[in-house]
Length: 165
Image (tube, rainbow, N blue to C red):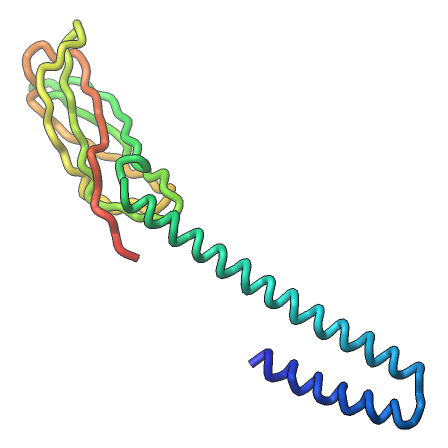
């Protein structure tokens, strides 16, 4: 639509140029040339803005593919544990989505139970059924009857499902 308007304006300017040429008004020819240059420079800036927008869109799509390929690289889990009065290990944690454009859900986490001497006693898998937008974090809480001798629990993101946009 904008190109059509530009074409009409240029046609009008072209006609005016020949009218002024026949009447030998030299000072108006320079004015006409000046306005023509302004119109062309406006069109160049529009083209440049469109090109930058397209470039941004391509970069954003490439980044989305990269983030969707490996969700575990963009999800971070942290937390702490304590024992309740029943003897269960209560784990309270937070899952953070560090991705720029990808949204994830149903985050799989490995829970590793360690003794005081840092010997691995048991591993378990937990799924956090939450939707995580880019930059968003969600809190979670889970309870386990941890193996006897458990001193600490380590959390690690195994993966997540990608939400198609």
